[in-house]
Length: 331
Image 1: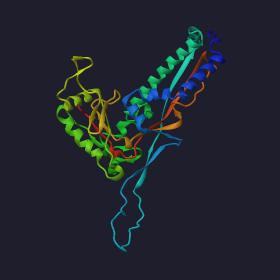
Image 2: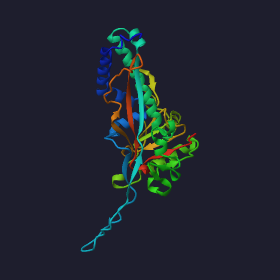
Image 3: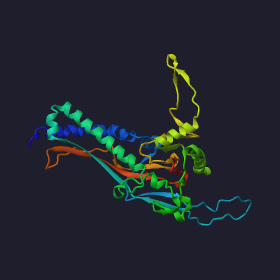
Image 4: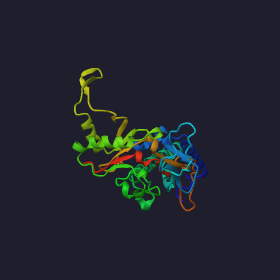
């Protein structure tokens, strides 16, 4: 077949070795998770956790307090009533793949090892961008896309109607402790955004002891981000910059509301704003399906080509949904 000589065992071994080195270096993993603001935020601060395996992703969560906690004095009998107050969440892991291939024609058109490696690198970059887009879209989804195979993302975890939905196997209609904070109809940003953001930020911050953390990240759309910037900074201060005092800087590079950085992500649904606490959300990833495991470049028996799969398996997880919030229908 045409190009068969180019796709020899030598070329196959060369591409396998090159891909192994690239995966082991962590570059593909880093490039994918740094491709969008939300994925980059997940990667920072130990919010991507590796799991060994299992049919489902399960997390222990508190459903009520321990009623034996009390003050006492002297020989007063202590309360030793057995306690329940804990349950488990269950989420199906979701799988993603991206295929990198090179045909015999492409190999013969790119003569020499250096040329073939350049082509392989370009295809690897294409694969990185493609799977990053899919993971980012899934992270903001409700998990029903592609016949329920997409990530169970923020639209399910931080639902706009938490009193009438089931998430991670728990019916929120019967479990008020498992309801996130939500306003499904904010309205005009100019008049309603700041007051709602203040209230729901504080709602997410409620808690004592180990639950006393506050939201530290807010994700929204470019439109809502720009509206919030205009509301928080109605007046710009111009200062000289560089060597010329005739030039000036305006606007902000990093926007914060209280302790939370406000970022916009193209994957965020129109009119949405998510208030997140980094201690209450992470991405669980299966070992061996983490975008950086070794993959062998193989030759199909019925094609003049070489190819391999880069694989992902995991899902978004929260142990405390009530610390997360969403504002929707922002206009």
